[in-house]
Length: 181
Ligand SMILES: [Zn+2]
Image (cartoon, rainbow, N blue to C red; front, side, top):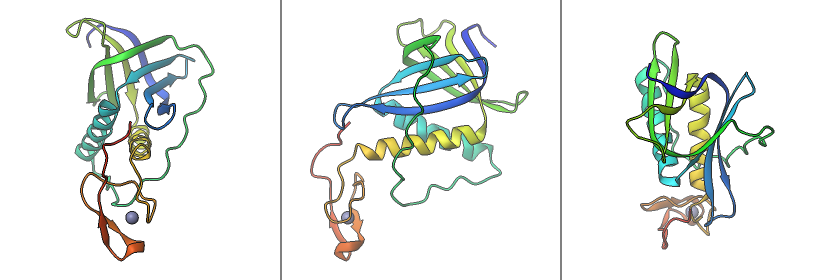
């Protein structure tokens, strides 16, 4: 393993959080371990969404459990627990890598500070249980959906494509404006 500035080992906390009002939200990941260390990674919304999808792909590869994304509106995001301690490291996310460590039997998250050397040592390395990654992915899906405009008929977040609206007997409506952040 390459040098890494902060090696958190297995995390005991892994959460995504949106801060601020819809349209002006900023996003962060919070990781913590049993040594009482906390890391805060500021992340763009598009990267957060891509991270959720990458986690789903990784979990699907790892099987044998199936991680089926149900085609229903995701639940409202579970709010992140408050930050109690000052983080030992806080940075804006640059390169991000996911993987699997067969020896530790844990998923891996390796993050680089956007201001650091992308070829240099990573800023943070975490070992993550599959169940923790699955919960994070669900939380991200909820956060991303919250920023979407909602259907005035049924209140569901509108997808990019046509929306099948049960209360209006399948009336199709579209988001007529860009996603809010
Ligand atoms: Zn609807």
